[in-house]
Every structure is written in structure tokens, then in C-alpha cells.
Image (tube, rainbow, N blue to C red):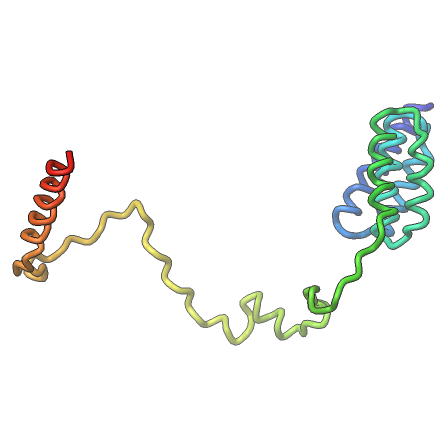
Length: 177
């Protein structure tokens, strides 16, 4: 295999991974199929590309293609690729659970947001003049000094209740001990 084929495969593989992670599954499939065509599929790197291709097929709702490729990978020469493909195949062939609509959260389509709303979020709308709230003081700041004339210094008899309670507890401990 030529070194430029391996380099091209690495580049296509990286593009395929990036597209997959960005949710662009069709583009991911194109890049990963191109990468798989440039390497020996029986090598560990070739198997890794194909594992990513299985997940891209499944994400793009091409379940039969994903299962077919994963079944082939179960006979791959590399032990790790065989192990991963068996685990993936188990997941892919698992029965789909029935879900009720009230269990699901509906995600709104953000494409339908008007330009006016987008401008408001960017600071160009009618809310741009509103000043931001003052942030809370950080915990490192010193507390404000307390004015002594504001402090209630009147005796509320708490100290006597506390002393009686302590004497009662100590007396009962001595009596029980």
C-alpha cells in the first residue's frame, strides 16, 4: 500500500469522524467509505474505519447496511474489532422498545425562528437596551460592617434556659451513671 493512500485514508477517516460527531451522517458515510476503500480492510485501522461506518449507517437509518457490515466484521482478523463488532451487532439486533408519545420530549425545530427573534438574541432587538442584572458579590469580598446601634442588645433570657438545660443534662448523666 502506498503511503499517500494511507495518508488519504487518515484524512478521510478524520473528516468522517468530524462529520459524524457534527450530526452530518450522510457526509460521514461518504468520507468513511472513501477511507475504507483506500486501506486494507483486514488491518486494525481498516477495521476501525468500518466500525465507524457501521455506527454512521445506523445513525443515518440504514440499519440493514449496518447489520450486514457488522456481521462481516465479526469475522475480522483483529480480536478487538471482532469484539467491538459483536457488541455492536448485539445492540443493532436488539428488539426496538415501544414508546408512548407522552414519554418523549418534543424538540422544537429551530429553523423556523424568524430573523427578528435572532436579532433580539444578538442584541439588535428591542431588548438590547435592558441593562444586565448586577452580579452577586463574590465570596472573597469582605462583609459590610454592622452598625452597633442597629444590634438588638436586649436580654431575651436565652442564656438562663441554656444553662438550666446543661445542668439538667449533666445531672441526669451523673444520676444514671
